[in-house]
Length: 318
Image 1 (tube, rainbow, N blue to C red):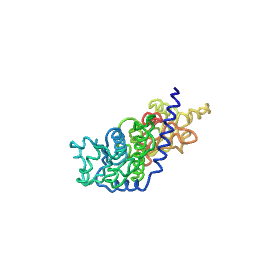
Image 2 (cartoon, one colour):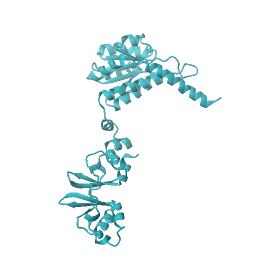
Image 3 (cartoon, helix red, strand yellow):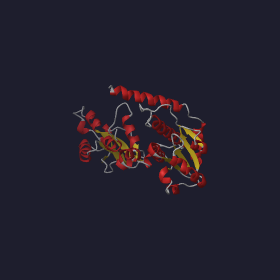
Image 4 (cartoon, rainbow, N blue to C red):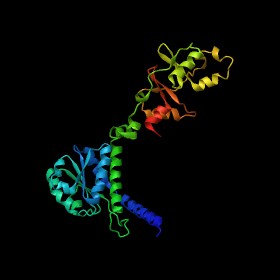
């Protein structure tokens, strides 16, 4: 038995079926999107069995991308969970056959409540399809299962149709990464999308003046251990000295200790503001001909902090 070949054949079969479902996408998708956008309520996804499992994922995707959505198991709906549905809601009922007993049994109540019913089914002419305001056709011709019994291709097509719906809604709502981050505050994803420069910058500043000698500059850099000294005049940052600046100045070894800070500082420095995203600051440091490892952080022209590339990498990762 060639296990690799069997697995690859499954992929081919499901990809083929997805192509067919893609070509079935019609104006109904636009109708569904507009119904959701214009709704004053939430989206309720309902289904049973494998369709219910996929429905949970679709509801979770919608909820995490700006659409208020919940999942209701159709069987539980028969025993009280229909109480979560109100007249302003859009109910998306998933049933491959369109005739699942549990799904069909809750349709009269959904109609009585006054919610808008959407069908996600392979059978638009089913009871579910005929009761619905709009139908998203998820019908496949062949399951991935070699017995053509287990819901494989049909489950995949349902999942991808849900993703398609979520994607259109993301675009329609102009949903941005910072919006996404609000719903994902925990873990590395939240840190990557929410953290600002002011949250990670060092506020104990390595400061020196224009006429500071090299002893002062080196001692300040060594003491603060940030790889930079900020040169300020009248509370404004006029330049920075990095370890690279010192190494270049040391080439003039005989004059080095006669120099002042203003003689070796970088005047055209790159800086960040405290309210930009940490991820943007990292891009600022890396997306250039020669990478830099430290940025002064300014508020107006006053230096308020220093951020190192290591600080940013620890927060947003790569």
